[in-house]
Amino acid sequence: IAILKVVDYHKESSVIIPLNYIQSSGTSKFVYVVGNRNGNKIATKRDITVGQNYNGRVEILSGLGSEDLLITSGYNDLTEGVQIKY
Image (cartoon, rainbow, N blue to C red; front, side, top):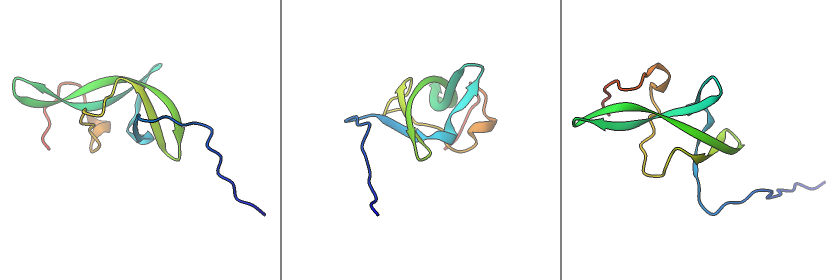
């Protein structure tokens, strides 16, 4: 009996987020990030392209950077442009 772990995909750096933060609308996938409008923090819808996923986490190929603040609480009830506090 043997237990093997095979690395079939490797990337030096990437943005990885939990799969449940991703929402869908038709054929597009999106997340909400913190934006700024006139000095107020707002929810901003960001279209994303996803890559590989494993164990409940997914690689983001485009649309989200390491400097973006991902909204992780209450994201299911948000609409774009609504003012937020954190």
